[in-house]
Image 1 (tube, rainbow, N blue to C red):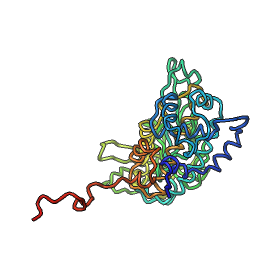
Image 2 (image 1 turned 180 degrees about the horizontal axis):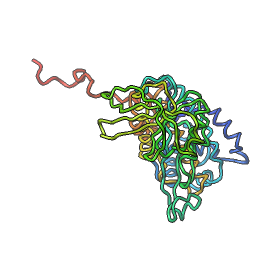
Image 3 (image 1 turned 60 degrees about the horizontal axis):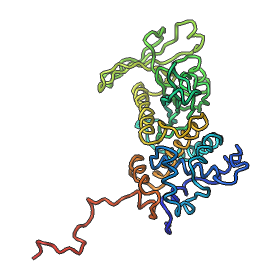
Image 4 (image 1 turned 90 degrees about the vertical axis):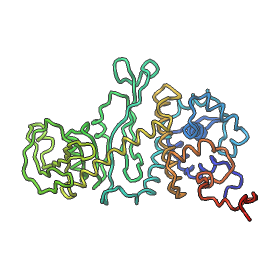
Length: 389
């Protein structure tokens, strides 16, 4: 029941506070602190994400304006930009990374029954990265080009619910394919990647983990066709081949057979050639699985447009990673709220509503489900009917 609580306070009910405290204790985040705890820091940064704040001064001004409501919302420390800047600079970013993983595990359970658009019982992941440009003079640790800085967000996205399960933040010079070394593959799962991840030694590790991959081949691939399966070309599938690699080093890296599938996309008029180690799914299902990889591109576009990960409140590596992980935790929190309350509104709509109603004292469900004015009964009012006789 609402009982006069703010929307922000009700939103925090979906956070497992005891789990956050465990993360803080693990990295001694509140050690020797007299005020402004790690949870205060998290609330300030989450507030910035939900209300689209642009700077530390912006956060301080807005929260101080709401000073009478802060205590009952969950804040305990005094809000100041210098204290928040110091917290982002010094407190271990892994506190918020670990807490985000707890929220991610909870969200994945909620969205486990979501459909993919493809008949598939196993989990499907899309792997890709996005680059966030930075000023090299302000972020000297984030080297990318000679006169340019950047960080990369390497993300493994669970396609059931579009939940990021693994996020690795690196400087811009780290090549995408190196991230495959840090992944622990799930047995039976599908990993969908673009050509930037085509490294046969690393793909063979996925094969040995009893998982499957779907990627695209390069034009200069050297292989020998072993068998061609019959295909229905009216579906867009051009060929379905079993191949072995012919290049000396590639054959050493991946000594087993692979499946090569050609597909013509009638919408884009593009001819695509896929490579996979799965021989059980129909060729058309493999093509449809690769089409789902576009969800990770939409995820990157969404978080860049609607979360604060392009302009940072601090310049150190710790401050940048702290802000990124709290942004991810905020995204997952909104996804959890959407699922648990059974909301039909999109994440974008929910964020927009929260941005202007965080400190309103109304029911969270009522705030996130505004009335449909098109369905109101306009006859129930005190206004006389002009045309009544």
